[in-house]
Image (cartoon, rainbow, N blue to C red; front, side):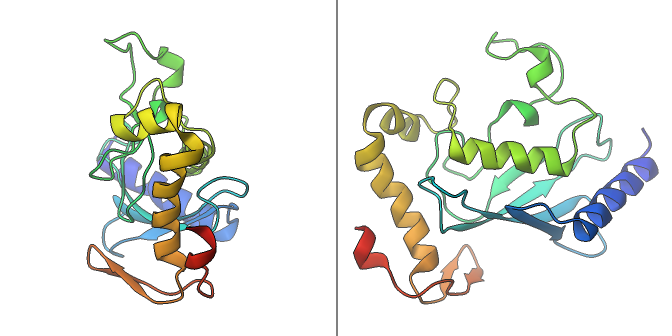
Amino acid sequence: MTELQSALLLRRQLAELNKNPVEGFSAGLIDDNDLYRWEVLIIGPPDTLYEGGVFKAHLTFPKDYPLRPPKMKFITEIWHPNVDKNGDVCISILHEPGEDKYGYEKPEERWLPIHTVETIMISVISMLADPNGDSPANVDAAKEWREDRNGEFKRKVARSVISLISGSPIEKHGTVFPALYPPIAGLLL
């Protein structure tokens, strides 16, 4: 796959997402002159601890996409077993194609060139709803999710969601997030 073919494919996928938006996320370019760096906003899935949150992330595509997967990094702070403390997302669909040297994943669970931004985002939304505690990127979050899901884990997730919906603009990592809902912080803590 040439860089030109890769760029055309990314342009087509972006146009498709703009024409036919998918529930749960929106996507666009970070810089209109760079098709390889996208920004996504993910709505916390209903009936999960992340409900009510809006989470900003970046997708960085390799020049030979779709032969290799993009990297995904949450910009918004998020407490999740499959997101490391730097915000990097660790799920099978974003792992390089081929055999897993550790034997945790089957080749068909890993990146395949048939995946699109839409399938990636649906997988990430599913990850928010149902973390994989067996292959954590954040060991502390995974331990809390397994041992104290309705206690400390829930409180840490709620804190990140509350900071986004507190009724005041929040600045994190140089990004200002507008107030999304009236203040409800006191109701959840």
